[in-house]
Length: 113
Length: 111
Image (cartoon, rainbow over all chains, first blue to last red; front, side):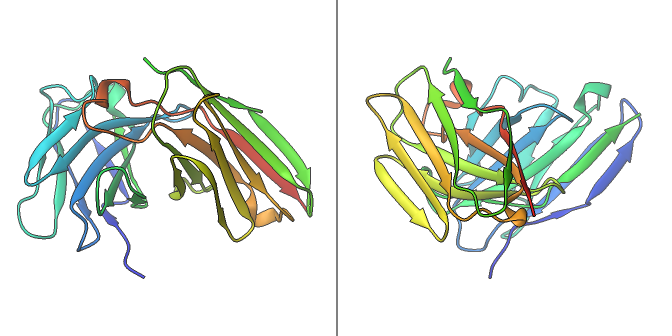
């Protein structure tokens, strides 16, 4: 069964460094999403991406964040200058259409020191 | 902003019991998403529903759009059902700022 994959599974970085989290969505899906979950807190929506551009973003998704689909398979989330409060689990998801079942990746645990 | 409340926050059941998790929201929505988060952190989408009832195996989800309420039922519960169950408003165009997740219901099923 097709699945969403994410790499790395765990990323440790120093405050102020740039990080890129990678996701490979399911191949025939058209919508891609990033969510984050700070330890012990709710899942939060960051951004959705469709047709090679951002379709929706939350208030959390400020100028420090960017997303890209550099080729036909990868979908990346970049954090330009990480802060301590960026430490969280980041989940990628994809769906065929917008209001549809989303398939989640296993997550990347980001730790900012 | 839509307030999404789940109850109970924690639920412990014996294997075989029928389980109900409730989700209420304050602002009318057209659909609701039920997710399951495993102890290891992985998230699985269970249901997206906009009316009536959906069934998948031992899981049943119902929604009443007028009453702004949804329930997730698990029949013949099993220890492997132990997880956090989350309801959320699915992303619709223009709603990103209001996209809301419930805080989850921690379910523990004892053998």
